[in-house]
Image (cartoon, rainbow, N blue to C red; front, side):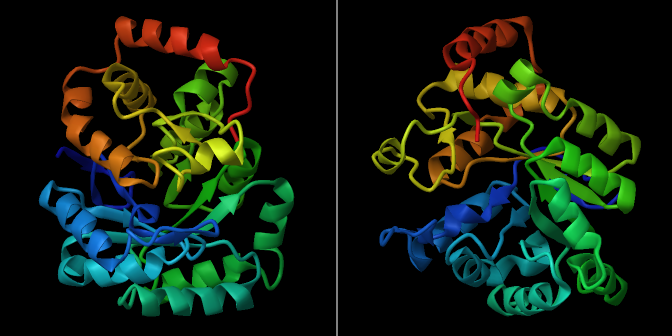
Length: 297
């Protein structure tokens, strides 16, 4: 595993990070009885053994906080732990933060994030009197959140966030399809790098939106919000990873299933040692022609 600094945070972060949905046995209303505590323990031990040192989770990921928290008990002082709140009001976020700390068996988060900022209206709500940003500032001042950041699916909303506060990190879908077809993320990564923010990448291994709920539930990846690249298609997966890395992201957080996560861990060194190439570009252009015009999320 290779490491790099997460912007100005001082965190030396593994080039692949662990998305907490991997540990979830229940997510998005769907139950996965085979993905219980024993599976989570095994996945986390596998990750730590291979050098993964950054774990990211949220209250909205089913029972991921509980299971991941139990799995991380032997490793908490060896890893960085990130959590989130999707609440936009201070009072609701305070209750959620307290519960997250309890379930994850910790007294602080290395990074605490506003979750899923998707519109300018949500930005306004977060920064309004009584909004969640009051709690975020307070948590950082008290050391409950060593650093604070946000995750977003709207580039305009993310750029507005940067105008209003000096965040430490941003987590965003720097995805080959959306960047090549629409330039999504280009403005944000320039702005984040200019501020020396830590840049975390989600959805690097996503191919497209699911065509239907039926397709999703019948697939190998029912916990994934969008359709992951098939892990049997090594050239496609590696080209997509290299594309995201070429944009300057600090770490990849693969889709929330163990096959995608383990694919990224097992191929990250090769992707870093042989960076994005003309052959990768040609492959992704061919794939883009198959999905062009379709929605991503």
